[in-house]
Image (cartoon, rainbow, N blue to C red):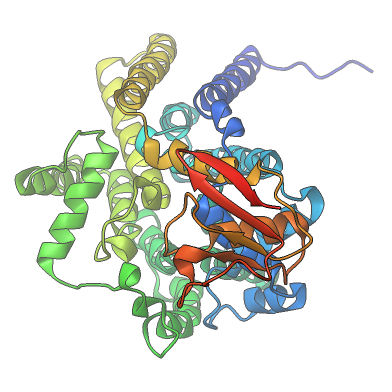
Length: 463
């Protein structure tokens, strides 16, 4: 029996797809591989300790009962699972996070393919999405696992929904259940997931022939989000009771945050001006309208609505834009392809031109990323992890009360306690720090181990 003959065009397409995927993965690891050497930071210690001290049954239940006041239980479960398998070692956590980053690139590529049906746009989008210097905490800080997991399940739900609608079908019971489960897991990861029902509704409005009956699932997901939103914003245990999560619904706060976020996205040294905010937000929207491109309109609405959950909060790092970055990249890739098709009309020259544009995007954006990283030492990222690593590497005793006359940590944190209890796996280990004690002890009686800290060095004073 003769083997089936593969058409040359299809074979070339597969080879190009494989080469493109390999280049995107290489590009991703070029920028992120050095994160494997970064130790835990202060937030990791808090997150890991809180996850370790909660019963597994409680963590599982908190993920199921997504509307309760348990803060981001999916990330806690992630910490707990890896700690159970690997113990107090940062590398397995780092490897798992980078692996999840690869999964997210694949999910994003699937999403772009579903929206555009263009392998060329997928290639443009994937190379831009793979890494962004101002979002680098997504890949360099284990504590940002909440954003990474939220992205995973947000876009998994979107892809499961769109892939069904692309076949002119509506999700059945099992597909709807899978989408709902992904939505709940996204909510369990981080609050930005509340934008998901709106994203699905926008897909129906902009990329499908709109029928009221087709918004059943987005409407149902919106209803599921209501108790979640209520719990996060009201009551004594509301997330918004924390000053860092208090929303201020004013135009000045909106403008301030977008000035900051657009500065991150466009890699500017300072926040952009109010005029630039208007230009960078409204310009792409007006261009999409002028070009009558539903794909561009969908990309713009996606990037806007997924930023709204953090648009009225106090200042945040660029990592909170991870989900909305997908919208920006989709917009840029679709627009790039439109320009390419307008300027180069014949198929074969288009393919060559697309390959050139792909390389150009990788080179120019990669160069911009490298330049930005070389401008600053990012002490907030590397220094924080060094402080934790220094303390964790001291081999402090783990069989009795420890007293620290001084240490390298602030009075607003419990990092030394977290580290020593996690290392020893003794949840009752006594770790006292004089700077945290009121009143301060008059003697060192009762402490078999006493330490101090000076000029970056820990010294044993007793015994």
